[in-house]
Image (cartoon, rainbow, N blue to C red; front, side, top):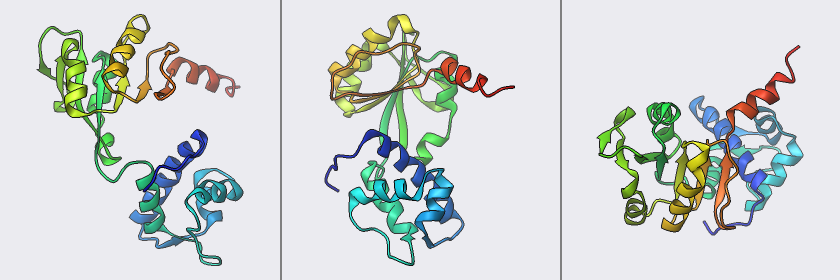
Length: 205
């Protein structure tokens, strides 16, 4: 499918819609109305129709959306028609825990290698090979990896990112508690666990 210019927030919601569609497929549901899908995704029906409208007419008035067809379309847009290779950089406690997570492959992502300041190669959690940082750039280029998970300390995050971007990384899931400076063509999604907990604490009474 040709690349469509879609707002970043809509892309995020597409992932949520896809999770809802997967649950419907698992329960052998063939069609779903926009109202039902929007309710499951926690958005308004108008927002869902606007997000899906970027791909042209997908539903049938009075019937809704074909679950299989819509899931396939969203999967193509999100680049999930084949396993997407990902590297992980920083094999500390958090990095090791992420390597043990089995859900990546189910969702279309394969952590093909991890990298750490360790001086020699080894097998990490979940059987993922862990290689020295010195091998990272060549690995990215040779295997044409475009995505990375970053779990290094904040003090070293920017220098690692500079090296990854120079080697060809275009998308980074950042767990380091720092703001990264990257070129315009590189997308960074940051997950600051302390900030998330701080936000949740507001609702505790």
